[in-house]
Length: 166
Image (cartoon, one colour):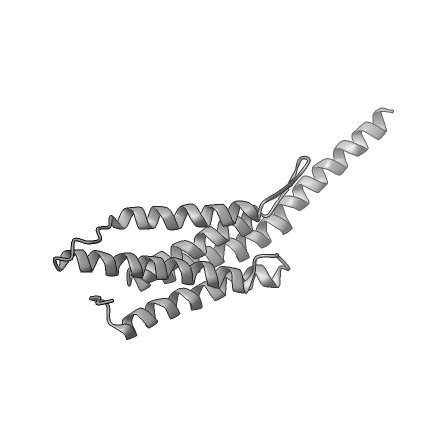
C-alpha cells in the first residue's frame, strides 16, 4: 500500500507508543493488577497502528484514489470506543465495592498515548504518559496513605462514640 508515511517513521511511531505504554503498564504490573505490561503495550500499539492505517487511507484518497475515503475523526472514535470496551471489562463491582477503575482509566490512557504517537505528536504522547504516571503513582500513594487513613480514623472514632453511648 502506497503511503506518505515512510516505513521508518511508522516504526518510530509504533515504538514510541509501545515504549510509553510500557511505563503505564509497569505501574499496574507492580501493583499486581490484571491488566499490566502487555495489555497496556498492546492497546497503545493497536491504537497507533489504527491511526497510521487511517492516515495511509487518507493520503491515498488525497492522491486521487477515491476507491476508499476516510474521516480521521471516525478512526479516532472507533479506537476510543474499542478501548472503552476493554477498560470497562477491567472494572469489577461486588456489592458496594468497586475495583479496577484506575486500571480501566489507564488502559484508556494507553490508547490516547498510541493515538498521539500514531499522528506523530511525540511531545503530547510523552506529556500524557508523564502526567498519567504522576496521577497513578504519586496521587495513588496520597490517596492510600493520607485519605484512607483519615477515613479509617473517622470510622474508628465513630465506633468509639457508639461504644461510649452504649
